[in-house]
Length: 271
Image (cartoon, rainbow, N blue to C red; front, side, top):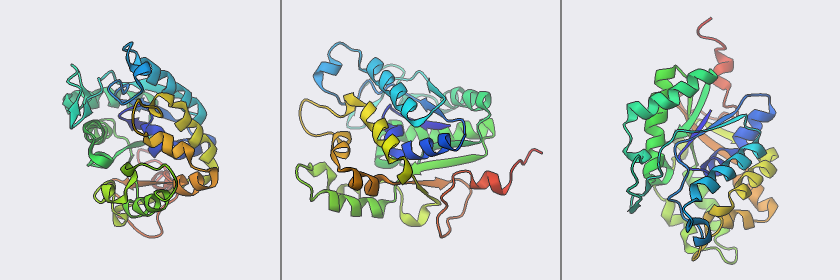
């Protein structure tokens, strides 16, 4: 099961891993805390108040591309950015962790999930809903007895290196400056997994493309739009690996390429 804050987060951080797991015969379930209705989008997608509905439809299209068997929404409102909070009643960032974790744990129990992906403690780049995904997801795994918890993250050093190269391409906005990510995501020494998803670059790109509302804006250039403009060989190089920190596992080298390694090492602790 892969737990995320907003539709399109799954495409950016975990899409290749999910496609690979589904291709290997695993049942893959996507759970969203919110519908991302406070997210940036072109005014044409926002003015009728149905952005959340559009993003849910896009999420289902993304899940189909990745081979996911089920999509669920926990029912919370998008909290908005820390600098521009939505103020919506029922925002995810303001939810009681125990209550939200119980909702997620119920799905983990129903599915009998062995692996759950969340985010790192800082939520990657600090979005309040992403930080809450870490808190709620970690607690839910404890309630449900989920055996493997993986923080979906990025190798900070490689991210900054890739951005330095991408920044040389024409039309790349200043938001992609490597200096902006000096403290984002995870230091390389903290990582436990580097999952090779190059064979699933097509599915990952299709999942990103499904989130059309997040590729457009009235002003500026969106991250998703920039990534989708990358030539396919560059896309495969830049986004061909996904990184995780597994709870309870001591980082070692080489990094693991198998998110199910712990389960294979100890197939069934309960007999």
